[in-house]
Length: 133
Image 1 (cartoon, rainbow, N blue to C red):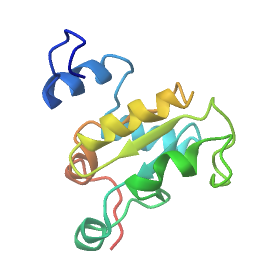
Image 2: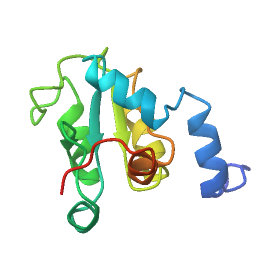
Image 3: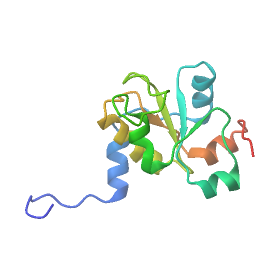
Image 4: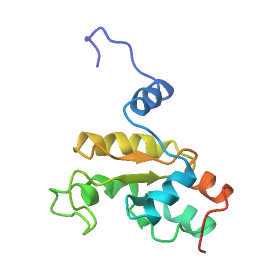
């Protein structure tokens, strides 16, 4: 953005900015919301990490590069779970960084209840929540 007079934003500042736009959730809150049918867990980790560490039972696996296509309620390639803009989506990456940017991207599509898991899959596993191999 040369010529605009704005300084470039580093990734740490960008993460801080996007996270101010929504309330992130911890592992127990994510688990409870999914169990109650109040949220859809979406695992965006790449295949090697899923194979190494396992899966969260019931979570949708959507590669990060397909996320917006699969969750946009108006999109032609949406998943059946992408029922409307009021859908509460909890995005899960490995450690809770990429998921923040992904949640912000979902917000730009009108999914205003999208959020992400603080600490990602590693925090979920550390909390002793269910994981399958």
